[in-house]
Length: 306
Image (cartoon, rainbow, N blue to C red; front, side):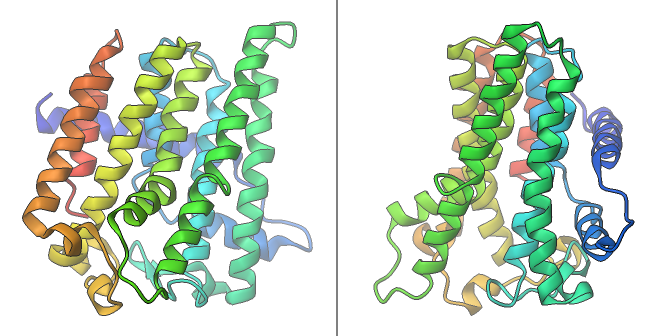
């Protein structure tokens, strides 16, 4: 797909996802409206919408055509956003800017930043449960697929997924010995990769894909997640803060071990290439269907400049 055509299709799909996410956001009213405002401020800050995009495209690739995917698109973005809100807090990364504007805690205060993150996590599952309203209650298979999708969402967002990776990352920053390659892989696989894997796995499950197809797409997503995070490490070295919307060089400043410090810049770039190639050639193309846009999306994301 030529670049101009891809950009036009991408813009159209992002708009579709933005509208879906927006339809599930809470109304800013009542005594608790401040936390609702902070939640919506966080979600509406923009971003690539990578996770819901991968989920929706995987769902369609596997033949999904229903509405039960929509609450999950919003839910995965809420969970991703809450993790960023908490990451930015003074107790974590102490970042004041994200995506070119002030972070949630900087605008609403640290306490409200914590509550906004908590609110988004809880509201994500409240939202995902609305998928049951989109299918026939007598359709046992459809209901079962939603239950499986909810299980994946909870597992990959929790202590055996994203939170587990964040825990190891925090502890590694204060350990006396250098971080090992195994530790670094665990952090990337869980902190970043788990939600990306959940996105594609949930899309496949809700579409009724076979166990083999679900596993292939999960492996595809794991490669994408790893490549995406390594590219983040690379951009922290060679990126432009005006493009990224956040400061660069923080990893070196904090003496943080990354794939760039472990292997060097050129080898890290080669690793991004090999992981993305395998994701597409070995796993994605094993699924029958039109994957042209999804392939282009993967290459665009893992080779991004911002």
